[in-house]
Each structure stands twice: as C-alpha cells, then as structure tokens.
Image (cartoon, rainbow, N blue to C red; front, side, top):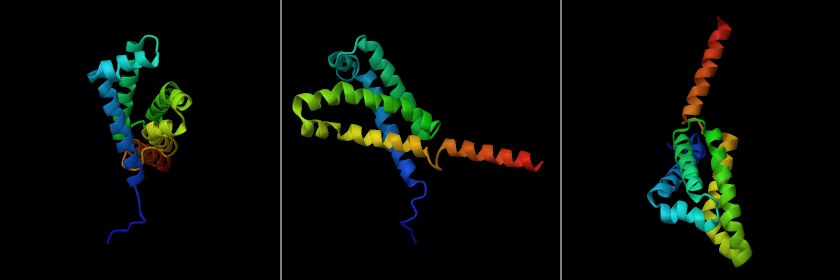
Length: 150
C-alpha cells in the first residue's frame, strides 16, 4: 500500500529536476539562439559587453543546472543561479513593474518567482537523499565512525 504522507526524497528531487532542467535549457538557448536569447537579449536589456555576459551567464546556467540535476554541490550551485535570478528581476521585471504596472509584471515574473523559491529551498535543504551530495556525506560519516571505533 502506498503511504501518501511519506514524501521521503520526492520534494528535493522534484525541485532539483525543475531547477536543473530549466536552467540547463535556458543556458543552452543562450548559445543556440544568441540573437534573441543570448547576446541580442543582453544588448537589448542594456548590458555593456553583452556577448561576454550572455555566454558567462549561459555557462553558469548549464554547469550549475547539471550539478543541481545530479545533486552534486547542490547548495553551492544554487547560489550563482539565485544571483542570476536577482539580476534578472532588477534588469527586466522591475522596469516592467514601473512602466506597465504590477499585474503585467506579476504575470511575466511567475516562472522567475517559482524558480527563485525553488533555489532558496535547495540552498536551505540541499539536494535530498537521492543526490550525490547525500552519498558523499554518508560515506564521510561512515569513515568517521569507522575511524573513531579503531
């Protein structure tokens, strides 16, 4: 019988899948479609040296997205992605709020808002039991316990 109240590893795994896949996809798209989602978008937003910043951001999204997907250095990998989300808010959503109002911005910000909350979750709680981080942690604890007994 299935016990619905026992979530076990599901919350962290679902958060990692959502965050990892979305950032991996967004990072790749900066390389695949530079005129609309990479350099061109960063130029339109007003970044100086948009080529550098688009590929810099895209690389972080790809690398950190993969790390979060596999659950390796989850908390650490979530930090640059959270910074990207904060910069994204101030460079794209805040101007929308000022120019077009709250409801337009709220509609456009919905995915960013969800991703920001998921990143905060991962920073606080980590990658969960189905992660490489957890496996490494358990092995380290096992080795410590082994060394303390001998």
